[in-house]
Image 1 (cartoon, one colour):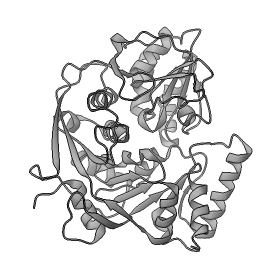
Image 2: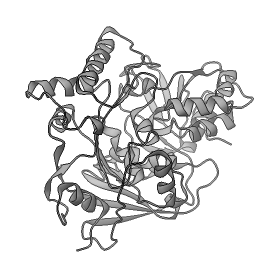
Image 3: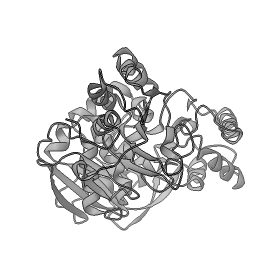
Length: 415
């Protein structure tokens, strides 16, 4: 019977010839990730169930990214808990406070290859499906069971496949594409479904841009986000990993597949307005003064995003009443941006450049906004309180819109 990528990957992981949407399977896990914020609860739960040894320390990845460097006694204690766990369990893949955001460094450092099942104690783990893996977020207590047993149960999802066609206009990016899709289908439009992104537009995208699409699959309820493997994927993976892998592709006549056609030929820059990610409007319909611009996060803190923003900011100044925070997504991105002179452009324009981390995205660390303030962010969520004060407002955009808006002090499209 014809099958989707998700069905094929989960069948492999479950040791079955085939599975179909709706089946419950016990899948072996290839990579398990937790970080400094969700990790301590996983460790506590691991100990509570009486487990003493993780199933495979080589398959666990622990980066520190959410509250780094530690900004409170509580976060410093969380770091201590995780460093102790790493040492006791002999976990090989530990990245301390200078590595960067978990969803950026896992693919960068070769932990993600096609055909794997990857789980992370963070909802945006679906990012890694850009490399043809079934990757999804789980709870911290579920992660404790993965640590102990190396497997987890899943209901095999149906699939929404977004066939995206059309050439993007100047200053329109992958972020605009995914915001537009979420605006069309709604925050629950793909609940517990795999979200595949395909079509000529996706084929033309870089791996970084594809990660933007899969990163935000969760924002329409998706269980995972996926892009089929092509030469770009293979080149990226083989330059960064020596792990074996298997490529799976979706059969277009699979019974559990729903194809949704998206034409982006006339798409203009998009903005998600408070306080829901599906409250999406063209930037031309948004008129709002801003207090802060945040360029970074696991969605748009990559080198290509910094280049897009620097191109607009070069020789310009950020508006007097607006502050801009630039946080590269990883040490690699930071280093390359430094070599290219991008960080000097940001500093000369009046921005504050910080070390790689999640920054204000989680609302609990660097750069949070105060009561009544407005943030324009390249991140992925704009819920109340997401970047600090519950009385603040968060808008979401591409890096280009963020840079142009920083100059004007209000939300505008780049020229």
